[in-house]
Amino acid sequence: MACRLCEVGCKVEHSEHKHVIKSFKREKPVARLLVEESGPLSFATQCRHCDEPACMFGCITGAITKDPETGIVNLNAEKCIGCWTCILMCPYGSITRTNGARPTAAKCDMCPGREVPACVEACPNRALVLMEDEEPAVALEDAA
Amino acid sequence: MKTFTYAIIGNSVAAIGAIEAIRSVDRTGSIGLFSDEPHHVYSRPLITHYLAGEVSEEKMLYRPPDFYERYGVQAFLGAQVESVEFENRRLQTAGGESAFEKLLISVGGRPIVPKIAGGDLRGVFTMNTWDDAREMKSYLPAVRSAMVLGGGLTGLKTAEALVEAGVRVTVVELAERVLSMLLDRRSAEVVVKQFENQGTRILTGTTISEIRGGECVESASLSDGSTAECQMVVLAIGVTPRLDLVQDTPVRTNRGIFVDRRMETSVPGVFAAGDVAEAYDALLDQNRVLPVLPNAYAGGRVAGLNMAGGERTYDLGASVNSTTFFGYPVVSAGSSAIEEGAEIIEGDDENGYRRFIIQDDRLTGFVMTGEVNRAGIVLDLVRERIPLNGLKDRLLDGIGLIDLPEEIRHKKLRGGTCCHEKH
Image (cartoon, rainbow over all chains, first blue to last red; front, side):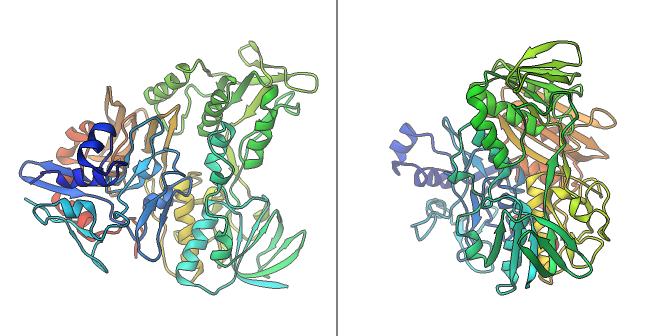
Protein backbone atom coordinates (compact mmCIF):
# COMPACT_ATOMS: atom_id res chain seq x y z
CA MET A 1 0.00 0.00 0.00
CA ALA A 2 3.11 2.17 -0.22
CA CYS A 3 2.89 3.75 3.24
CA ARG A 4 6.71 3.90 3.28
CA LEU A 5 6.82 3.32 7.02
CA CYS A 6 9.60 0.80 6.37
CA GLU A 7 11.68 3.62 4.89
CA VAL A 8 10.96 5.75 7.95
CA GLY A 9 11.91 2.91 10.29
CA CYS A 10 15.12 2.30 8.36
CA LYS A 11 16.12 5.97 8.35
CA VAL A 12 15.58 6.34 12.09
CA GLU A 13 17.46 3.13 12.87
CA HIS A 14 20.42 4.28 10.78
CA SER A 15 20.56 7.78 12.22
CA GLU A 16 22.54 9.11 15.15
CA HIS A 17 19.56 10.27 17.18
CA LYS A 18 17.39 7.18 16.61
CA HIS A 19 14.39 9.37 17.19
CA VAL A 20 11.95 10.06 14.40
CA ILE A 21 11.68 13.85 14.85
CA LYS A 22 15.32 14.52 15.79
CA SER A 23 16.62 12.21 13.10
CA PHE A 24 14.55 13.79 10.38
CA LYS A 25 15.04 17.39 11.53
CA ARG A 26 18.73 17.36 12.39
CA GLU A 27 20.14 14.72 10.07
CA LYS A 28 19.42 13.73 6.53
CA PRO A 29 19.33 9.97 6.90
CA VAL A 30 18.82 7.84 3.80
CA ALA A 31 16.71 4.70 3.73
CA ARG A 32 18.56 1.54 2.77
CA LEU A 33 15.45 0.12 1.22
CA LEU A 34 13.11 1.64 -1.31
CA VAL A 35 9.39 1.34 -1.86
CA GLU A 36 8.60 1.17 -5.54
CA GLU A 37 5.16 2.11 -6.72
CA SER A 38 3.34 1.96 -10.03
CA GLY A 39 -0.45 2.12 -10.21
CA PRO A 40 -1.93 -0.42 -7.81
CA LEU A 41 1.36 -2.29 -7.43
CA SER A 42 3.90 -1.47 -4.77
CA PHE A 43 6.66 -3.30 -2.99
CA ALA A 44 9.77 -2.68 -0.93
CA THR A 45 13.15 -3.61 -2.37
CA GLN A 46 16.29 -4.07 -0.37
CA CYS A 47 19.57 -5.94 -0.40
CA ARG A 48 19.18 -9.68 -1.06
CA HIS A 49 22.42 -10.49 0.78
CA CYS A 50 23.35 -12.53 -2.28
CA ASP A 51 25.32 -15.77 -2.12
CA GLU A 52 27.50 -14.30 -4.85
CA PRO A 53 27.34 -10.58 -4.23
CA ALA A 54 28.28 -8.65 -7.37
CA CYS A 55 28.67 -5.51 -5.24
CA MET A 56 31.41 -7.22 -3.23
CA PHE A 57 33.07 -8.52 -6.41
CA GLY A 58 33.19 -4.96 -7.71
CA CYS A 59 34.13 -3.08 -4.52
CA ILE A 60 37.49 -1.48 -5.22
CA THR A 61 38.51 -0.85 -1.61
CA GLY A 62 37.47 -4.04 0.16
CA ALA A 63 34.74 -2.16 2.06
CA ILE A 64 32.10 -4.76 1.18
CA THR A 65 32.37 -8.19 2.77
CA LYS A 66 30.08 -11.17 3.21
CA ASP A 67 29.95 -12.59 6.71
CA PRO A 68 30.53 -16.34 6.32
CA GLU A 69 28.56 -17.09 9.52
CA THR A 70 25.46 -14.96 9.05
CA GLY A 71 25.52 -14.51 5.26
CA ILE A 72 25.00 -10.78 5.73
CA VAL A 73 26.68 -8.57 3.13
CA ASN A 74 28.21 -5.70 5.09
CA LEU A 75 29.53 -2.35 3.93
CA ASN A 76 32.22 -0.64 6.00
CA ALA A 77 31.59 3.07 5.41
CA GLU A 78 35.02 3.89 6.88
CA LYS A 79 36.69 2.14 3.96
CA CYS A 80 34.27 3.37 1.29
CA ILE A 81 35.55 6.19 -0.93
CA GLY A 82 32.30 6.65 -2.86
CA CYS A 83 33.30 5.39 -6.32
CA TRP A 84 29.80 3.89 -6.78
CA THR A 85 31.01 0.72 -8.49
CA CYS A 86 28.75 -1.27 -6.15
CA ILE A 87 25.76 0.77 -7.33
CA LEU A 88 26.61 -0.15 -10.91
CA MET A 89 27.09 -3.82 -10.04
CA CYS A 90 23.91 -4.42 -7.97
CA PRO A 91 21.16 -5.75 -10.26
CA TYR A 92 18.53 -4.96 -7.61
CA GLY A 93 19.37 -1.29 -7.28
CA SER A 94 19.69 -1.85 -3.54
CA ILE A 95 22.66 0.34 -2.72
CA THR A 96 22.26 4.06 -2.17
CA ARG A 97 24.41 7.05 -1.32
CA THR A 98 24.54 8.95 1.95
CA ASN A 99 24.18 12.72 2.08
CA GLY A 100 26.85 15.04 3.27
CA ALA A 101 30.27 16.32 2.35
CA ARG A 102 31.86 12.91 1.98
CA PRO A 103 29.09 10.63 0.74
CA THR A 104 29.55 6.88 0.99
CA ALA A 105 27.57 3.92 -0.21
CA ALA A 106 24.90 2.63 2.17
CA LYS A 107 22.94 -0.61 2.16
CA CYS A 108 20.82 -2.88 4.34
CA ASP A 109 22.84 -4.28 7.25
CA MET A 110 19.95 -6.32 8.70
CA CYS A 111 19.97 -3.96 11.71
CA PRO A 112 22.71 -5.38 13.93
CA GLY A 113 21.64 -5.56 17.56
CA ARG A 114 17.96 -5.86 16.73
CA GLU A 115 16.08 -9.11 16.72
CA VAL A 116 13.79 -7.91 13.94
CA PRO A 117 14.97 -5.37 11.36
CA ALA A 118 13.43 -1.91 11.74
CA CYS A 119 11.67 -2.12 8.36
CA VAL A 120 9.95 -5.35 9.28
CA GLU A 121 8.90 -3.97 12.66
CA ALA A 122 7.53 -0.82 11.03
CA CYS A 123 5.43 -2.64 8.44
CA PRO A 124 1.75 -2.38 9.49
CA ASN A 125 0.61 -4.92 6.92
CA ARG A 126 3.11 -7.72 7.52
CA ALA A 127 4.17 -7.38 3.87
CA LEU A 128 7.74 -7.47 5.11
CA VAL A 129 8.61 -10.53 7.15
CA LEU A 130 11.89 -11.96 8.37
CA MET A 131 12.67 -15.48 7.16
CA GLU A 132 15.82 -17.51 7.53
CA ASP A 133 17.71 -20.46 6.07
CA GLU A 134 17.18 -21.30 2.45
CA GLU A 135 14.54 -18.65 1.94
CA PRO A 136 15.60 -15.19 0.89
CA ALA A 137 16.73 -13.41 4.05
CA VAL A 138 13.91 -10.92 3.94
CA ALA A 139 11.00 -12.04 1.82
CA LEU A 140 9.12 -9.60 -0.29
CA GLU A 141 5.47 -9.76 -0.99
CA ASP A 142 3.82 -7.76 -3.69
CA ALA A 143 1.20 -5.79 -1.81
CA ALA A 144 -1.00 -5.24 -4.80
CA MET B 1 61.17 -28.53 -2.61
CA LYS B 2 57.74 -27.42 -1.51
CA THR B 3 54.73 -28.54 -3.55
CA PHE B 4 51.58 -26.43 -3.48
CA THR B 5 48.16 -27.71 -4.42
CA TYR B 6 47.54 -24.21 -5.73
CA ALA B 7 50.17 -21.69 -6.79
CA ILE B 8 49.16 -18.13 -7.54
CA ILE B 9 51.44 -15.61 -9.22
CA GLY B 10 50.32 -12.06 -8.50
CA ASN B 11 48.81 -10.46 -5.43
CA SER B 12 45.94 -8.28 -6.45
CA VAL B 13 42.20 -8.57 -6.94
CA ALA B 14 42.10 -11.65 -9.21
CA ALA B 15 44.39 -13.53 -6.81
CA ILE B 16 42.15 -12.68 -3.86
CA GLY B 17 39.03 -13.69 -5.80
CA ALA B 18 40.67 -17.05 -6.49
CA ILE B 19 41.82 -17.58 -2.89
CA GLU B 20 38.40 -16.77 -1.44
CA ALA B 21 36.78 -19.11 -3.97
CA ILE B 22 39.23 -21.95 -3.35
CA ARG B 23 38.73 -21.73 0.41
CA SER B 24 34.94 -21.78 0.01
CA VAL B 25 35.28 -25.38 -1.23
CA ASP B 26 38.73 -26.61 -0.15
CA ARG B 27 39.88 -25.78 3.37
CA THR B 28 43.07 -27.83 3.38
CA GLY B 29 44.80 -27.72 -0.03
CA SER B 30 48.00 -25.71 0.26
CA ILE B 31 48.11 -22.29 -1.41
CA GLY B 32 51.37 -20.53 -2.29
CA LEU B 33 51.16 -16.92 -3.43
CA PHE B 34 54.10 -15.24 -5.18
CA SER B 35 54.33 -11.51 -5.78
CA ASP B 36 57.11 -9.27 -7.01
CA GLU B 37 55.65 -6.44 -4.94
CA PRO B 38 56.62 -6.50 -1.25
CA HIS B 39 53.24 -5.28 0.03
CA HIS B 40 50.28 -6.94 1.66
CA VAL B 41 47.41 -7.01 -0.83
CA TYR B 42 46.33 -3.43 -1.48
CA SER B 43 43.73 -1.74 -3.64
CA ARG B 44 45.38 -0.64 -6.88
CA PRO B 45 42.68 1.93 -7.79
CA LEU B 46 43.35 3.64 -4.46
CA ILE B 47 46.91 4.60 -5.35
CA THR B 48 45.73 7.92 -6.81
CA HIS B 49 43.73 8.57 -3.64
CA TYR B 50 46.86 7.78 -1.66
CA LEU B 51 48.80 10.27 -3.77
CA ALA B 52 46.13 12.90 -3.06
CA GLY B 53 46.52 12.23 0.66
CA GLU B 54 42.91 11.08 1.04
CA VAL B 55 43.62 7.48 1.98
CA SER B 56 45.92 6.34 4.76
CA GLU B 57 48.44 3.49 4.54
CA GLU B 58 46.11 1.32 6.59
CA LYS B 59 43.11 1.96 4.37
CA MET B 60 45.09 1.01 1.28
CA LEU B 61 44.76 -2.65 2.27
CA TYR B 62 42.23 -4.54 0.17
CA ARG B 63 41.93 -7.26 2.77
CA PRO B 64 42.74 -7.22 6.54
CA PRO B 65 46.34 -7.69 7.73
CA ASP B 66 45.66 -11.27 8.87
CA PHE B 67 44.16 -12.29 5.50
CA TYR B 68 46.87 -14.75 4.39
CA GLU B 69 46.96 -16.38 7.79
CA ARG B 70 43.20 -16.74 8.00
CA TYR B 71 42.98 -18.19 4.50
CA GLY B 72 45.92 -20.53 4.97
CA VAL B 73 48.05 -18.87 2.30
CA GLN B 74 51.83 -19.01 2.30
CA ALA B 75 52.63 -15.60 0.86
CA PHE B 76 56.01 -14.94 -0.75
CA LEU B 77 55.98 -11.15 -1.01
CA GLY B 78 58.77 -9.47 -2.91
CA ALA B 79 59.54 -12.83 -4.52
CA GLN B 80 59.44 -12.37 -8.27
CA VAL B 81 58.74 -15.52 -10.23
CA GLU B 82 61.51 -15.69 -12.82
CA SER B 83 60.28 -18.62 -14.86
CA VAL B 84 57.68 -21.36 -14.97
CA GLU B 85 58.20 -24.86 -16.32
CA PHE B 86 54.67 -25.66 -17.43
CA GLU B 87 55.38 -29.31 -18.35
CA ASN B 88 57.07 -30.10 -15.03
CA ARG B 89 54.72 -27.86 -13.02
CA ARG B 90 57.47 -25.92 -11.32
CA LEU B 91 58.21 -22.28 -10.81
CA GLN B 92 61.45 -20.54 -9.94
CA THR B 93 62.12 -17.49 -7.81
CA ALA B 94 65.46 -16.08 -6.65
CA GLY B 95 64.79 -17.95 -3.39
CA GLY B 96 64.39 -21.36 -5.01
CA GLU B 97 61.99 -23.67 -6.75
CA SER B 98 58.42 -24.70 -5.94
CA ALA B 99 56.15 -27.28 -7.50
CA PHE B 100 52.43 -26.92 -8.04
CA GLU B 101 49.42 -28.91 -9.09
CA LYS B 102 47.27 -26.00 -10.29
CA LEU B 103 48.51 -22.54 -11.23
CA LEU B 104 46.85 -19.14 -11.55
CA ILE B 105 48.68 -16.41 -13.43
CA SER B 106 47.30 -13.07 -12.31
CA VAL B 107 50.27 -10.76 -12.75
CA GLY B 108 48.29 -7.87 -14.19
CA GLY B 109 49.55 -5.30 -16.65
CA ARG B 110 52.42 -2.88 -16.91
CA PRO B 111 52.34 0.70 -18.11
CA ILE B 112 53.21 1.30 -21.73
CA VAL B 113 56.15 3.72 -21.75
CA PRO B 114 56.39 5.73 -24.96
CA LYS B 115 59.82 6.66 -26.26
CA ILE B 116 60.14 10.38 -25.68
CA ALA B 117 63.33 12.42 -25.66
CA GLY B 118 64.05 13.26 -22.03
CA GLY B 119 61.91 10.38 -20.74
CA ASP B 120 64.74 9.32 -18.42
CA LEU B 121 64.91 12.63 -16.53
CA ARG B 122 64.07 12.76 -12.83
CA GLY B 123 60.44 13.72 -12.42
CA VAL B 124 59.07 11.38 -15.10
CA PHE B 125 56.73 8.80 -13.59
CA THR B 126 54.31 6.04 -14.41
CA MET B 127 51.36 5.29 -12.12
CA ASN B 128 50.65 1.61 -11.65
CA THR B 129 51.81 0.49 -8.22
CA TRP B 130 51.72 1.69 -4.63
CA ASP B 131 55.47 2.28 -4.89
CA ASP B 132 54.91 4.49 -7.95
CA ALA B 133 52.48 6.57 -5.87
CA ARG B 134 54.94 6.74 -2.96
CA GLU B 135 57.74 7.93 -5.21
CA MET B 136 55.52 10.54 -6.81
CA LYS B 137 54.32 11.68 -3.42
CA SER B 138 57.82 12.17 -2.10
CA TYR B 139 58.72 14.12 -5.24
CA LEU B 140 55.72 16.48 -4.90
CA PRO B 141 57.49 19.17 -2.82
CA ALA B 142 59.57 19.95 -5.93
CA VAL B 143 56.50 20.24 -8.15
CA ARG B 144 54.44 23.34 -8.93
CA SER B 145 53.02 22.15 -12.21
CA ALA B 146 52.77 18.77 -13.89
CA MET B 147 51.91 17.37 -17.26
CA VAL B 148 49.95 14.13 -17.52
CA LEU B 149 50.26 12.28 -20.83
CA GLY B 150 47.13 10.24 -21.44
CA GLY B 151 43.47 11.05 -20.84
CA GLY B 152 42.37 7.54 -19.90
CA LEU B 153 41.18 6.57 -16.43
CA THR B 154 44.68 6.32 -14.95
CA GLY B 155 45.73 9.64 -16.44
CA LEU B 156 42.62 11.49 -15.32
CA LYS B 157 42.55 10.00 -11.81
CA THR B 158 46.23 10.86 -11.42
CA ALA B 159 45.55 14.39 -12.68
CA GLU B 160 42.71 14.73 -10.17
CA ALA B 161 44.98 13.56 -7.34
CA LEU B 162 47.70 16.03 -8.32
CA VAL B 163 45.17 18.88 -8.42
CA GLU B 164 43.99 17.89 -4.95
CA ALA B 165 47.60 17.89 -3.80
CA GLY B 166 47.86 21.52 -4.95
CA VAL B 167 49.67 21.01 -8.25
CA ARG B 168 48.76 22.89 -11.43
CA VAL B 169 48.02 20.17 -14.00
CA THR B 170 47.78 19.93 -17.76
CA VAL B 171 46.45 16.73 -19.33
CA VAL B 172 47.59 15.89 -22.85
CA GLU B 173 45.63 13.34 -24.89
CA LEU B 174 46.47 12.28 -28.42
CA ALA B 175 42.91 11.20 -29.30
CA GLU B 176 40.19 13.71 -30.04
CA ARG B 177 38.60 13.19 -26.62
CA VAL B 178 39.40 11.86 -23.16
CA LEU B 179 38.26 8.39 -22.04
CA SER B 180 37.71 7.51 -25.68
CA MET B 181 37.39 3.79 -24.85
CA LEU B 182 34.53 4.48 -22.44
CA LEU B 183 32.76 7.65 -23.46
CA ASP B 184 31.33 9.31 -26.54
CA ARG B 185 32.09 12.95 -27.31
CA ARG B 186 29.29 14.47 -25.23
CA SER B 187 29.94 12.40 -22.14
CA ALA B 188 33.64 13.15 -22.43
CA GLU B 189 32.79 16.86 -22.42
CA VAL B 190 30.96 16.39 -19.13
CA VAL B 191 34.17 14.97 -17.66
CA VAL B 192 36.34 17.71 -19.16
CA LYS B 193 34.08 20.29 -17.54
CA GLN B 194 34.82 18.87 -14.10
CA PHE B 195 38.51 19.46 -14.73
CA GLU B 196 38.01 22.91 -16.21
CA ASN B 197 36.03 23.87 -13.11
CA GLN B 198 39.26 23.21 -11.19
CA GLY B 199 41.34 25.25 -13.60
CA THR B 200 42.90 22.16 -15.14
CA ARG B 201 43.63 22.28 -18.86
CA ILE B 202 42.93 19.23 -21.01
CA LEU B 203 44.55 19.34 -24.45
CA THR B 204 43.38 16.81 -27.04
CA GLY B 205 44.79 15.87 -30.42
CA THR B 206 48.34 16.47 -29.28
CA THR B 207 51.14 14.69 -27.46
CA ILE B 208 54.41 15.35 -25.67
CA SER B 209 57.26 15.39 -28.17
CA GLU B 210 60.12 16.20 -25.82
CA ILE B 211 60.78 16.51 -22.11
CA ARG B 212 63.51 19.00 -21.24
CA GLY B 213 65.69 19.63 -18.25
CA GLY B 214 69.20 19.23 -16.86
CA GLU B 215 68.89 16.41 -14.36
CA CYS B 216 65.23 16.96 -13.53
CA VAL B 217 62.19 17.79 -15.63
CA GLU B 218 61.96 21.53 -16.29
CA SER B 219 59.56 21.75 -19.24
CA ALA B 220 57.77 19.72 -21.89
CA SER B 221 57.19 20.44 -25.56
CA LEU B 222 54.06 19.36 -27.37
CA SER B 223 53.62 18.17 -30.93
CA ASP B 224 51.72 21.39 -31.68
CA GLY B 225 54.95 23.29 -31.10
CA SER B 226 54.10 24.81 -27.71
CA THR B 227 56.26 24.41 -24.61
CA ALA B 228 55.14 24.53 -20.99
CA GLU B 229 57.13 24.70 -17.81
CA CYS B 230 56.58 21.70 -15.52
CA GLN B 231 58.52 19.77 -12.91
CA MET B 232 56.75 16.46 -13.34
CA VAL B 233 55.56 14.37 -16.27
CA VAL B 234 53.27 11.37 -15.76
CA LEU B 235 53.14 8.81 -18.56
CA ALA B 236 49.70 7.19 -18.56
CA ILE B 237 48.96 6.13 -22.12
CA GLY B 238 47.80 2.65 -21.17
CA VAL B 239 48.75 -0.73 -19.77
CA THR B 240 49.63 -3.97 -21.51
CA PRO B 241 49.40 -7.52 -20.13
CA ARG B 242 52.60 -8.78 -18.51
CA LEU B 243 53.35 -11.76 -20.72
CA ASP B 244 57.04 -12.35 -19.86
CA LEU B 245 56.38 -15.59 -17.96
CA VAL B 246 54.50 -17.21 -20.83
CA GLN B 247 56.57 -16.01 -23.77
CA ASP B 248 57.80 -19.01 -25.79
CA THR B 249 55.87 -21.49 -23.67
CA PRO B 250 52.90 -23.72 -24.56
CA VAL B 251 50.56 -21.13 -22.97
CA ARG B 252 48.61 -19.54 -25.81
CA THR B 253 48.64 -15.78 -25.96
CA ASN B 254 47.12 -13.19 -28.18
CA ARG B 255 47.03 -9.68 -26.74
CA GLY B 256 46.77 -11.27 -23.31
CA ILE B 257 46.82 -14.83 -22.01
CA PHE B 258 43.96 -16.50 -23.83
CA VAL B 259 41.56 -18.31 -21.49
CA ASP B 260 38.42 -20.34 -22.07
CA ARG B 261 35.11 -19.79 -20.30
CA ARG B 262 36.50 -21.64 -17.26
CA MET B 263 39.42 -19.18 -17.15
CA GLU B 264 41.79 -22.01 -18.06
CA THR B 265 44.66 -21.39 -20.47
CA SER B 266 45.68 -23.69 -23.32
CA VAL B 267 47.71 -25.65 -20.74
CA PRO B 268 45.39 -27.80 -18.59
CA GLY B 269 45.58 -26.90 -14.92
CA VAL B 270 47.01 -23.45 -15.65
CA PHE B 271 44.56 -20.57 -15.30
CA ALA B 272 44.78 -16.82 -15.84
CA ALA B 273 42.62 -13.93 -14.65
CA GLY B 274 42.67 -10.19 -14.20
CA ASP B 275 44.42 -7.63 -16.38
CA VAL B 276 46.82 -10.20 -17.86
CA ALA B 277 44.04 -12.37 -19.26
CA GLU B 278 42.20 -12.18 -22.54
CA ALA B 279 38.91 -13.48 -21.23
CA TYR B 280 35.31 -13.68 -22.33
CA ASP B 281 33.36 -10.44 -22.62
CA ALA B 282 29.75 -11.54 -22.23
CA LEU B 283 28.37 -8.37 -23.78
CA LEU B 284 30.49 -8.63 -26.94
CA ASP B 285 30.47 -12.45 -27.02
CA GLN B 286 34.21 -12.60 -27.64
CA ASN B 287 37.45 -12.68 -25.70
CA ARG B 288 39.35 -9.51 -25.04
CA VAL B 289 41.69 -7.83 -22.60
CA LEU B 290 39.43 -5.80 -20.30
CA PRO B 291 41.34 -4.42 -17.35
CA VAL B 292 38.59 -3.46 -14.91
CA LEU B 293 38.46 -4.46 -11.28
CA PRO B 294 35.07 -6.23 -11.04
CA ASN B 295 36.11 -8.50 -13.92
CA ALA B 296 39.37 -9.31 -12.17
CA TYR B 297 37.58 -10.45 -9.01
CA ALA B 298 34.86 -12.37 -10.85
CA GLY B 299 37.36 -14.00 -13.22
CA GLY B 300 39.71 -14.90 -10.38
CA ARG B 301 36.81 -16.38 -8.51
CA VAL B 302 35.75 -18.58 -11.44
CA ALA B 303 39.37 -19.67 -11.89
CA GLY B 304 39.62 -20.53 -8.19
CA LEU B 305 36.42 -22.57 -8.17
CA ASN B 306 37.57 -24.54 -11.21
CA MET B 307 41.09 -25.02 -9.82
CA ALA B 308 39.42 -26.60 -6.80
CA GLY B 309 37.58 -29.10 -8.99
CA GLY B 310 34.41 -27.16 -9.78
CA GLU B 311 32.70 -26.51 -13.08
CA ARG B 312 31.96 -22.84 -13.42
CA THR B 313 31.81 -20.56 -16.42
CA TYR B 314 32.73 -16.91 -16.48
CA ASP B 315 29.95 -14.73 -17.75
CA LEU B 316 30.25 -11.56 -15.71
CA GLY B 317 32.93 -10.16 -18.04
CA ALA B 318 31.86 -6.74 -19.28
CA SER B 319 33.11 -3.24 -19.82
CA VAL B 320 31.88 -1.59 -16.61
CA ASN B 321 33.31 1.53 -15.06
CA SER B 322 32.26 3.76 -12.23
CA THR B 323 34.27 6.60 -10.82
CA THR B 324 34.07 10.20 -9.75
CA PHE B 325 36.00 13.29 -10.83
CA PHE B 326 36.15 15.86 -8.05
CA GLY B 327 33.16 14.13 -6.50
CA TYR B 328 31.07 14.09 -9.68
CA PRO B 329 29.93 10.53 -10.54
CA VAL B 330 30.47 9.07 -14.00
CA VAL B 331 29.25 5.56 -14.81
CA SER B 332 29.52 3.74 -18.12
CA ALA B 333 28.92 0.22 -19.39
CA GLY B 334 28.87 -1.84 -22.54
CA SER B 335 28.91 -0.04 -25.89
CA SER B 336 28.98 3.34 -24.16
CA ALA B 337 31.60 4.91 -26.43
CA ILE B 338 29.95 4.34 -29.79
CA GLU B 339 28.74 7.35 -31.74
CA GLU B 340 26.73 5.83 -34.57
CA GLY B 341 25.10 2.69 -35.89
CA ALA B 342 22.61 2.58 -33.05
CA GLU B 343 19.62 4.40 -31.68
CA ILE B 344 20.71 6.87 -29.04
CA ILE B 345 18.50 8.29 -26.32
CA GLU B 346 20.06 11.10 -24.36
CA GLY B 347 19.05 13.58 -21.74
CA ASP B 348 20.72 16.39 -19.88
CA ASP B 349 19.21 18.06 -16.84
CA GLU B 350 20.01 19.02 -13.25
CA ASN B 351 20.43 15.31 -12.41
CA GLY B 352 23.21 14.97 -14.95
CA TYR B 353 23.82 13.71 -18.44
CA ARG B 354 22.64 10.26 -19.50
CA ARG B 355 22.88 8.36 -22.71
CA PHE B 356 21.43 5.00 -23.71
CA ILE B 357 22.52 2.99 -26.74
CA ILE B 358 19.89 0.73 -28.25
CA GLN B 359 20.38 -1.92 -30.92
CA ASP B 360 17.59 -4.28 -32.05
CA ASP B 361 15.34 -3.12 -29.20
CA ARG B 362 17.97 -4.09 -26.67
CA LEU B 363 20.09 -1.80 -24.55
CA THR B 364 23.76 -2.44 -25.36
CA GLY B 365 25.39 0.30 -23.31
CA PHE B 366 24.87 3.50 -21.39
CA VAL B 367 26.46 6.46 -19.64
CA MET B 368 25.09 8.09 -16.51
CA THR B 369 26.62 11.08 -14.78
CA GLY B 370 25.58 12.96 -11.66
CA GLU B 371 22.68 10.90 -10.35
CA VAL B 372 23.75 7.27 -10.68
CA ASN B 373 21.53 5.51 -8.16
CA ARG B 374 20.10 2.22 -9.45
CA ALA B 375 22.48 2.12 -12.43
CA GLY B 376 22.78 -1.61 -11.70
CA ILE B 377 19.21 -2.23 -12.81
CA VAL B 378 20.08 -0.61 -16.14
CA LEU B 379 23.25 -2.69 -16.42
CA ASP B 380 21.16 -5.79 -15.86
CA LEU B 381 18.97 -4.86 -18.86
CA VAL B 382 22.19 -4.93 -20.90
CA ARG B 383 23.53 -8.16 -19.39
CA GLU B 384 20.24 -10.05 -19.69
CA ARG B 385 19.43 -8.63 -23.15
CA ILE B 386 15.91 -7.82 -22.02
CA PRO B 387 13.69 -6.58 -24.89
CA LEU B 388 12.90 -2.96 -24.13
CA ASN B 389 9.37 -2.76 -25.56
CA GLY B 390 7.76 0.13 -23.69
CA LEU B 391 10.71 0.56 -21.34
CA LYS B 392 12.53 2.68 -23.87
CA ASP B 393 10.49 5.77 -23.06
CA ARG B 394 11.18 5.43 -19.35
CA LEU B 395 14.95 5.09 -19.47
CA LEU B 396 15.56 8.79 -18.96
CA ASP B 397 13.31 8.94 -15.89
CA GLY B 398 15.13 6.09 -14.17
CA ILE B 399 14.13 2.45 -14.25
CA GLY B 400 13.00 0.56 -11.17
CA LEU B 401 12.40 -3.13 -10.65
CA ILE B 402 8.72 -2.31 -10.87
CA ASP B 403 9.17 -1.24 -14.50
CA LEU B 404 10.55 -4.62 -15.56
CA PRO B 405 8.32 -7.18 -17.27
CA GLU B 406 6.48 -9.14 -14.57
CA GLU B 407 8.14 -12.45 -15.34
CA ILE B 408 11.62 -11.00 -15.07
CA ARG B 409 10.77 -9.04 -11.94
CA HIS B 410 9.44 -12.14 -10.22
CA LYS B 411 12.48 -14.14 -11.18
CA LYS B 412 14.72 -11.46 -9.74
CA LEU B 413 12.83 -10.84 -6.52
CA ARG B 414 11.97 -14.39 -5.62
CA GLY B 415 14.96 -16.22 -7.04
CA GLY B 416 17.33 -14.21 -5.09
CA THR B 417 20.85 -14.48 -5.16
CA CYS B 418 22.57 -12.39 -7.63
CA CYS B 419 25.17 -12.75 -10.23
CA HIS B 420 24.98 -14.36 -13.52
CA GLU B 421 27.28 -17.26 -13.02
CA LYS B 422 25.60 -20.49 -13.91
CA HIS B 423 25.35 -22.91 -11.02
